[in-house]
Image 1 (cartoon, rainbow, N blue to C red):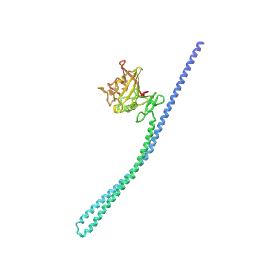
Image 2: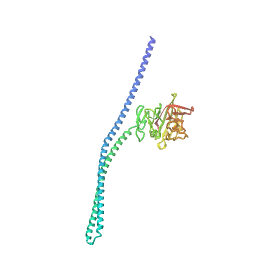
Image 3: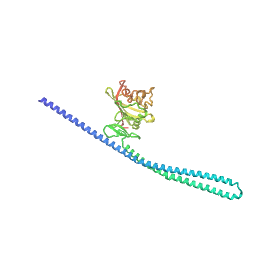
Image 4: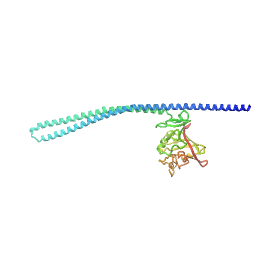
Length: 377
């Protein structure tokens, strides 16, 4: 009985521990669900703001089209009036030519017609003066119509549209300015967040404890053999394999106050890490040049071989090798003489890291590159 009692007690203890463990798991899941609800509400609020802006634009565009239609009608009327004026001018010129011809003939007559000739000349002079005055008045009238009717209406419509667009732009900037610049400003559990690292549109990034993921590989579902523009803007999804984009990486590191952590797993399920206390990527005009130093970790300082190198892609070879590294290994990277370190190559072929301590290559199966602001800059 004593043995049975001990066995029963032990089972009760195990059941109790299991219940406690399950309770803790349920509590953690509840907290995670609550955090996801908060993220969901934030995304809904952002979408509602964007939808409001779109609705305002939709309301304004018909008014602007109506103003354009009015201007087109006024321009058509003015063009018709100008055509009539030109026709009248042509008729007046023809009349003046005919009168001039008559005067020329009359000059050959006798002196008794001299008085009549003077009268005709006076008529011609008055006609010319009258025509000039009428033409000038009509010209002034057209200018006034163009400046007061067309230009004023066009100016009003343009000013109204510009004011609306400025209002929309201001609202959009207010929304973007409320977003965190990087994951260091995110207060929440690990997950996908909307951040705004630069002056362009916001991006989705994976955040965890202040770290912003800039690269992730683990199953080869995303093709990393991309061109220069694709590597500049980024590709893939923050929820899976992706490259955040060289422009975004530059915006996140341009203050020269970022650290880099590289986590890798090899084909033997062994984990490796390379940390760089200083990490920065230059801008587009400098070829997204790499700046790193102060290594620590267990993977060896293989990345240092590519320090100060510009980024190379399949359509933009900037390495110092005699071969085209990005083309040969099917992925963009800061190549010098090709390998040593390359986490963007063809999956199951080009993901490598050279371990100088063992003089061996690490066959990388999964990798994650992430950056974080230094504690002290």
